[in-house]
Amino acid sequence: MSDTADTEQRGEAPVDEADGAPRRRVSRRSLLGWTGAGVALGAGAVGGGVAVASLPEQRSQPSSGGEIAFYGPHQAGISTPVQDRLHFAAFDVTTDSRDELIGVLKEWTAAAAAMTAGRDVGEGAVGGLAEAPPDDTGEALGLPPSRLTLTIGFGPTLFEKDGKDRFGLAKRRPEALVELPAFPGDKLDPARSGGDICVQACADDPQVAVHAIRNLARIGFGKVAVRWSQLGFGKTSSTTPDAQTPRNLMGFKDGTHNVAGTDTAALDKHVWAAPGDGQDWMTGGSYLVARRIRMHIETWDRTPLKEQEDIFGRDKGEGAPVGKRKERDEPNLKAMLPTAHVRLAHPDSNGGAMILRRGYSFTDGTDGLGRLEAGLFFLAYQRDVRKGFVPVQKRLAANDALNEYIQHVGSAVFACPPGVRKSGEWWGQALFGDKR
Ligand code: HEM
Image (cartoon, rainbow, N blue to C red):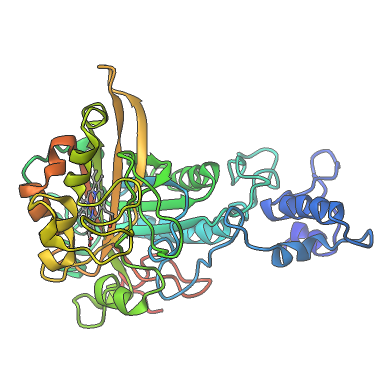
């Protein structure tokens, strides 16, 4: 045990060797503990000696403060109830060394386990050597975990790039991890597309999500580099049918008919890769399609209400399908226009195909022509991209009335491995052939 750890175990403040002054390591948990203590005491808790260490376990799990388990058979952030905010980053691997890449994944896993539990990375933001930059950047000090989830995915280029098997992974590329075909109307910006690795950070507090991505990028410095990233501010999908359905920037309820995070049968059928699907290392994982979809908001805002509703096939207020009264009423697809978004995207029009949508709204300022640079950052998880996103998007790209008001400007696809089951394991361990 290190001297510092030993001192801390005894409950004493560590002493700075340089000047002999006591230093206290402030973790987000301990800060939270103090905040919690204040609240508890203010609420009339008896006794002066509130045990700070026990508060995190005691505190209730409000949507803004809860902790989502990092360890488990599936990665969190897929079937997890959708958080309010997103910071998504796609990374290029810049090192040629397989060992260095593995090193990054190991460090990332430890950092992700800490941050999702509301702890600092490594020695923390203020607890390490005074002569070295802190392990943690510090902007999440005192903030609760905020239901932070970190979900990793591996892009096709990690397996093979320009015909080169960079990390000895080419044979392990899953067949389901296809490059997406070009769809009519796509106007993809290469600078906002692709990536060797992605990390999706979702949290109820944007500062917590941004802190997580920033610290992972910092850990990977010199070995991986952010290729592009996207902030999202309003969830546009729900995996919790009992909760109020959120609205997208077009003002419509979005996520009404989605795979529910509690529907294990649907998740097994449509979302989780199963034994026999292909590469064994993906069992329990899922495939992610990310599309940056720009909305021509100004044109949309000049479109009459009836036309807007016809475009989706649902009404704007309630979200009910054409001819029905309530949002959850069974849609009569034939009552909708043949070009209606819902009619075209519905599983009945696509041989039963279903995807779990988990997207966010974005606004990245204006585009220089006075138009909002806004839209939907579409995220969809599925068991096989060839049977999920691809057929649905083919149909939509060819016929959807919505196409007049949107444009797909960024695109990426990733294989998201199963969850890390316990401490000591790391993201992608099975992919790299390590025995668990
Ligand atoms: C900016 C682009 C988009 C907007 C504004 C949008 C909006 C909507 C809205 C309002 C609904 C109805 C409510 C619901 O059931 O969730 C819906 C349904 C749906 N959308 Fe989209 N969507 C967009 C792009 C896409 C894309 C690219 C796909 C997949 C390729 C997709 C797939 C679906 C599916 C599968 C449904 C459910 C249909 C059903 O089963 O009833 N959407 N979308």
